[in-house]
Length: 538
Ligand code: GLN
Image (tube, rainbow, N blue to C red; front, side):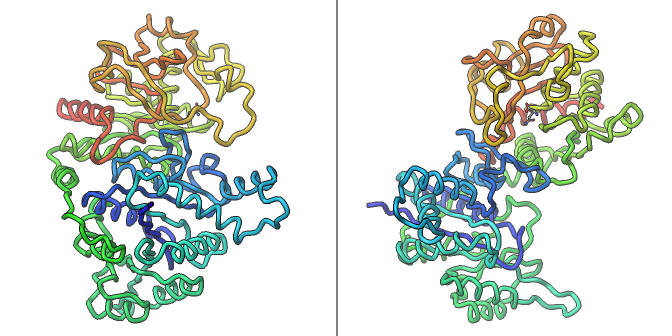
């Protein structure tokens, strides 16, 4: 018999309250008590996946090993739990409808009228139970995107209602995250918005079992009692989630509030052991007590929105803790870099990271930043588009191929050092058609990266269409830019280095997706170390 327990996390009052972090923190606590936990995100938008979304809309697009383009919350899940997620961990309304419509076309509902209830809700329920049915998890936490009361999340809420009824109270519970705002004019915390949002949930037939209240000030006992009374929950099930200085504090804050204890009680999991957070707390201690500082320039074009580079920023936090240094990331807009501004923008930096990206806007600034790092012997890490820009810069400046470019930016360049592979040339559909997910890469013996990874075969996650053009490999190699990571199946170049430079690495893949608290990514750790050494020399 399948005994998987299900926890649903809904949100009310406002968006951006941090459902993902609460879900990840609870998962962390349950995992620390020995349970096998996974988290899933249901997104109410109609895009089949966020791969086609501009980062300004939804922040970074996260990529899993199996090549799913997903919501950035999955990044938090992996960083907290150190467990891989997959396509099954992120479902959108677009994907649900696509699947139901395909079934209809195949005749699977022959004779029936296909409707939101039961067909769409059944599809949602199946997707929720898919993870539980693998037998790999004791507990599945499902985060429902959006806010209760939104038209678009109604089918999800209805599916939760049905599941809760079918699975029973011991096997399914609902945590509702709300906001308790502070009115400074009145000097008071207000519970009314929470009462209303619990009521909205109730109108859909769902009683919240646990309330998590985001707040800027401590909730008094009286206030918790009042919330409990009006919202139909026990007082110990009113959990305060006060603003934290780092998201990595939230698991301990939830532990102090007893979120895991009431969860386990309600799910009738009475034999839980005490949570072991040793590794987590070691990381926190190092993160909070840095012995030095480095300043890294993050050169990108979506810098106005921090979420666009979420995984990179988090990877720096992990790598900083590992090196016991504070990594200050200075986000620099690539469109603001030119011959006049470059010295002012980059001269204070201890290292330069040129970010991933798409399209022509801002690329000349990225190329200038690469040149600056190369010529000033500043530690450099180029990720995806950042690696491609490093190749273009080397071809232009060192090989003298003045119009070297990527065919993404200039289709007619005479020196397409970055170009499309044959199998991409015929692709017309945008969604899900890039080179995605984990690909193997063989590291060159004696190279910088081989030393860093301390192994010869790695697998890293990709998300790009264009590739290093191997026609130029010999020429670049002879001129000092060496291919040190090769895909063993396709021969594609995945990593370039400049051995005469103290630390210059460009990677076609995204190392940031695999950095977790328990396993900081070796490339980021080594990059921060190199930047720290550079800072000490200054
Ligand atoms: N635009 C580039 C490509 O498609 C790089 C993509 C990226 O940086 N993720 O190949």
